[in-house]
Amino acid sequence: MLATGGLDYSVPVVAGTKATDAISALPLNTTAVAAEIAEAEAYIEAEWNAHNWRAVRFTGYGNSAMKGFGISPDAYTQMAMQLAYYRLNGKPCGTYESIMTRGFLHGRTEVGRSTSIDALNFCQAMDDPTISDAAKVELLQTATTAHSGYLAKAAKAQGVDRILLG
Image (tube, rainbow, N blue to C red):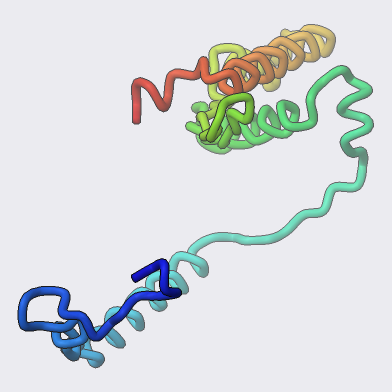
């Protein structure tokens, strides 16, 4: 059939039936679906209104400055998010960063995490007045180097999330 340029849909799929014979209307309770959608919309609106949302545009410096510090812009940003969460909640936050494993046929993704002992040490030091600014910079460099190293391993399929956590 394919050699002749197509399929013959008039040929029965199952003895005595055609594929179109099995098609029937799907009964939907549109009132219930509409009610569920309205409930979901109300929930999202309540969540949105329960938080203080605002966008902040930072123009003090950008990627060039971060690279000038010898720090990956991604790692720098990840540590900034870790520090912000730590200051708000007093503990580190779990993060997820998708990492491509392009070096492999049909490359997949691996997981990158910015939560680490080095990140925690950096966050704890930032609000400790007994720690010098130079030591804080060193802790930032240690945390960002560890983060970049972890991502490099993940890109080589040497991460643990996909293997151990699914």
